[in-house]
Length: 338
Ligand code: FAD
Ligand code: EPU
Image 1 (cartoon, helix red, strand yellow):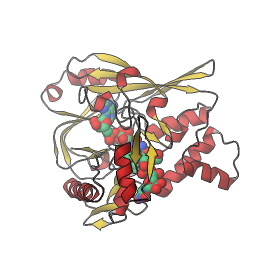
Image 2: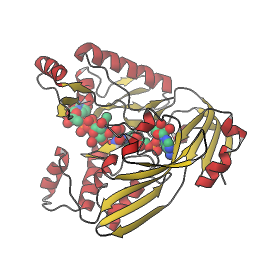
Image 3: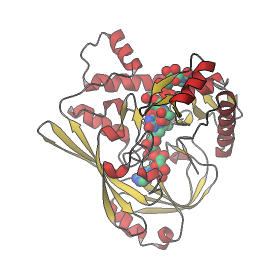
Image 4: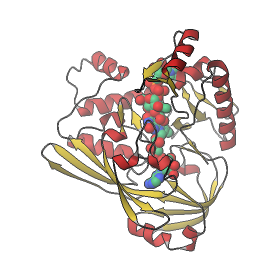
């Protein structure tokens, strides 16, 4: 049975804590709820926004359509020959799934510990952190096709995953509601400590042979030290993507700024640390009205209390302009602007 509300405050439903209203707000708990809701005029006659945990969204105005909160629960798993097939409902909190896997010794997602949001949103931008991306553990997902009402299955190849990208942000944008995601994990861990800070903490702690619980705990600790907790300081994680530039562009910038922070991005391209670019423009820890950047991470924009979405958006424009002016690099937002 779905829930339906009118003129509903979204303040508690977005991690920026922006106080806007949805004209209509519905919450579904099963695929059947979705089928039932999709037959109603409120679904057919309004524009639709699918909402998970609201941790990658910036609302700049009231949403004059239907906001659909996907709260489908449930995790199942099956082990066969060291391979673990795990399936989770789209409404499962991402970190609850990670911790379920870590507790059971299912390896592969431990580096993705403590990323906010839901399982259903995880394929949308191919979430990633500390050397692992969703695509490394993704098997398939089920999704409701909004125009036809049919449930379809997407395998890995169909999702066109890339850095913070998938088919659901491009060719199929706004067409599908993900209801369930399946993952392929392993009972034998391939521990990934390539991200410098992980290895550093393991060494400091004297952990020579880390298990997946150690990695999960250390990644969580690093994240807490760098990123603001949305329950106290509104934010949506990295506001911009790390820009990927050609080798020639990289050489041009490096010649001007010798300590440029960058990482190889494959195909002869280079990923620049947007946090570094923004910090060099003097924005780190800046307070601008009710918004600003986080003191430990210039890539994270914050709501210091009472900020409007417009205010945060305008501030993000000033960052884009400053970085373009100083480095000739165009920052793209990671956060969805509504
Ligand atoms: P929402 O913000 O609700 O939605 C995000 C997008 O997905 C929207 O376009 C929405 O319409 C769509 N969507 C949501 N659910 C569904 C569904 N079931 N079907 C179809 N479309 C759907 N991201 C990273 O990749 N790596 C990080 O390390 C990271 N760290 C973060 C740290 C903090 C403190 C915060 C606040 C955010 C961070 N993020 C990070 C961003 C965020 O956690 C991810 O983008 C996450 O996947 C968003 O999940 P959500 O459920 O909150 O999605
Ligand atoms: N840096 C600065 N100043 C800053 C911030 C960063 O100089 O204010 C430099 C540092 O040199 C640092 C480097 O940038 O070594 C990289 O910083 P960090 O390790 O914090 O990672 P990031 O590139 O800023 C990305 C993701 C995060 C993810 C972390 C860990 C993007 C846009 N962001 O951040 O994802 O958690 O790596 O893997 O790719 C998110 O997407 O919301 C998010 C938080």
